[in-house]
Length: 400
Ligand code: PMP
Image (cartoon, rainbow, N blue to C red; front, side, top):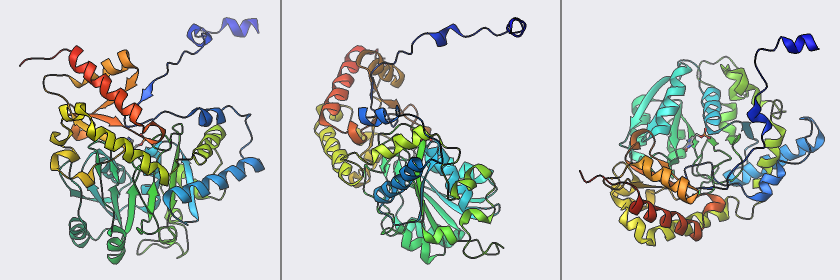
């Protein structure tokens, strides 16, 4: 043993021997959001094996929770191990094969991201474009479907880079009339804005655990309609009742998830904490109300007026479409003369509050303030607005 030790060339890291110090922060960015104590405590239960009956039972319960939150009876409803990006990739890889045509609605970064993933898997990607801050009308979508004849339409419900909520009414029916599946990203909106997977005829819907659901990151709910589950591209040689993944999903990691034992390879602790959001009183339906209460409070605030959310270039407010504003993430213009980095750093350092700058098309233009799940309270609205007022007085302002 002494000889083996003498061969070590990399010393044990001293910093790992120090206890971990983590500050309390109010997470009002676009996610992750704060995790309530009870959900955090679930992560501390003794570890179980991934095939233990208790874990299999928890998986069934998570499935029921997803069916409730999505308002669906889909059998293929599960949680993938990973972030929202993983669910996005899992959805695209399981629906599309090389050469398939996908129409991607792009009005912010998430459409761009989906298009990029679809391109990498060899799909024929057609883009339906709207300026950031605008949403798609059914007429826009129908034109795209007629022109490109896609097998799948991708659209983002809550565009967190711009603060736009995409109306979904009628899109499922439209897609089906044109022989196309509807794939919806609800990572930033699920639980904060109403969505009804079955009634709205959505074929694939996914979200993330660390936003409105207030669970730790690392688990992403996803559901496939029966149509998507048995669907196959024209010319595909897999049987008509084969799950979509059986069509030759080009990644093993995601396709294996559709096996009955989707727990395999899963972080058990994440599964357990994922289950816990289902017990929150404000899960899904009633948390819409929380989001809107906080949303109303924002509207009344003089500081919001000062920051004029209605005038943000590239945000929902800029186009005067109140109904299209995402209740979970508000974009406000970076006040003239200030740097967004100064403001976000000031809020973090002096007030222990996280908010974010813009993303993709809104970089440098907006601040993004998230109010998700248990964070959607009037007190938190007042706290972030107080912190912003303070920032405007104390951060440097250029006169140019
Ligand atoms: N889609 C949307 C609409 C999002 O807001 C996000 C995260 N901000 C993602 C996908 C990706 O999720 P994650 O960060 O969990 O990978």
